[in-house]
Structure formats: structure tokens, C-alpha cells
Length: 308
Ligand SMILES: C[S@@+](CC[C@H](N)C(=O)[O-])C[C@H]1O[C@@H](n2cnc3c(N)ncnc32)[C@H](O)[C@@H]1O
Image (cartoon, rainbow, N blue to C red; front, side):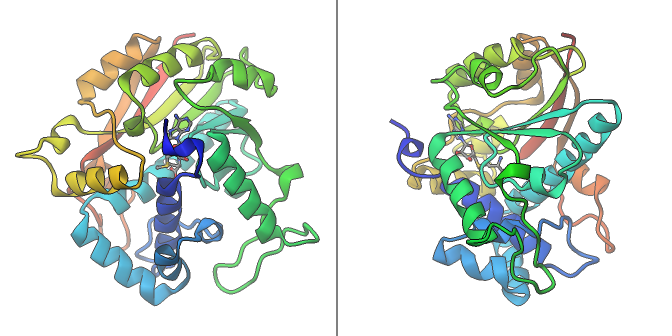
């Protein structure tokens, strides 16, 4: 039985920490501003870089050396997703589904862009809602402590629709329908930082279930670990470290792909890849004032569109 049945996801807290630390970097250097991310960080080891600008600078630089390619990927995929939400909203898409949302704050950062559905296992989802409520305070006023990175948190009434679901166990299509998702209208599905943790069987089942609620004009953005990065002899040092670290924390990696194998997997479920980028290209799309910050990665982000 997965650790996530009993505990919230530690990897969700780790990625929130990376977004919080990135938000504290100097203006011309940071790739993302996610002022709410720090509210979801509780683990003692993660607290300091999520709250102090000095510690954030140090932690990002040390982490980039210890585990090259991960921090850059996590913050750049969030930029990529924000752009996908804005561009699909301009095209009239009004539903955004965060699959394995974790402590993602997009629904609060871009509240008017669409109706947001957050799908995750009940444990992680409950931890997120508890932290949101604690941050909003007893009055539920939603005002959080100020400072340069203070933020306003929307309380539950204005927030996303939470859809509890364990991929590979529960039927995600059925769960979405039960929560007022409109399968006849196009949607943007974001599946970030989740596919590597699913077994190939759970991934296939979930894609098949999603197909039943995917209208023409919908798209899916996901990220995946590059298959050769995990090679025991010639793999990527960052990938191999993360593989060991997440396994120790009870969230082992189960799948990795090449651009061809992910495209083939998605096409079995009616999805055609129209963009697939590695870290170097992502960094070139979102350069900082002093140029692209990252080159060497082992994750890719892909977008696929549904013919319907
Ligand atoms: C690395 S975190 C990524 C969270 C978020 N998408 C982000 O980018 O920060 C992985 C997330 O996937 C969720 N997850 C993992 N396995 C899952 C499953 N079988 N069903 C639903 N959610 C799952 C975890 O609870 C966690 O929130």
C-alpha cells in the first residue's frame, strides 16, 4: 500500500519549497513568483529557504550543485503551466484540472482564468486544505502576514473544487463528473510532477478514464523523467539522487519515457503531442536578466491535444 494512503505527499511539500525559495530570489534572477507557496512548507528542513531570502539564495545554489536539473525544472514547469492556462483561457477553455495538485497554488494565483479542479489523494488534499485554513486565520479573512512576499489567500468559498482520487485505484473520470466537471466542454489538464510516481498500469488506466471526460479542444500538459537518466551506469547524477531520495521517503519512481514512448503512450488515448521540451529549451524560453539559468536536465514537459 502506498505511503500516500496514510500521509500527505512529502514531494508535494518539497516542490512547494522550491517555488517558495525561487520567489525570494532577486527580481532579475527569479523565474517565478509564487508568494503563497511558503504557507505549505512545514518540514523543519524546508522552512528556512522558504522564508529567508539569504537562505533561499544559498539553498538554491547548493541544491543546483547537489542535484542538478531538479529545481530549475520545477519552477520552469510552473511558468510553462501558467502560460498554458492563459493561452487556453484566451481560446475559451474555462476548466483547468490539476491532476496530483499537491500544494500547487495556481488556482489562487490565477483565480479568474478558469474554474479549477484539484485532484489528489485524500491525505495530501486534506493537508492542503488544513494549511489554507490555518493561513486564512480564525476569521477566514484570508489576509496573511505582510512583508515583501505576503499574500492574500482566497478562502474555500472562492477556491478550487477538490476532487479526491487515487490514480490507478479510483476512476478519475467518474470522480470529476461527481464534482460538477463538464465532460462536454474543453479543459486543460495539468499533470505535473506526478507521472513518474505512477506505475505504467496506473498511468494507462488513468489516461483511459480521462479520455471519457476529454472533449475536443482539450489539452494535457505533463512532465516525465527521461528514461536514460535513470540508467544505473550512465544515468544523470541528479536523477539518480532524486530516485534514491524519493524512494526513501516512500514515493518511489515507477516510470520514465523518451519523447517517442510518451508520444506513443498518449496517442493510444487520443492525444497528440505538439510540444515536448527539455530543461535547456525551457530555460531559453524563460531567460532571466542574465540569460538562461539552466541547461542540463533530465525531465521534459510535453503538451498533447485531444481530437475529441
Ligand atoms: C511531486 S508532487 C507534485 C505536486 C504538484 N503537482 C506540483 O507540481 O508541485 C506529486 C503529487 O502527486 C500526488 N500523487 C502521487 N500519486 C498519486 C496517485 N496515485 N493518485 C493521486 N495523486 C497522486 C501526490 O499526492 C502529490 O501531491
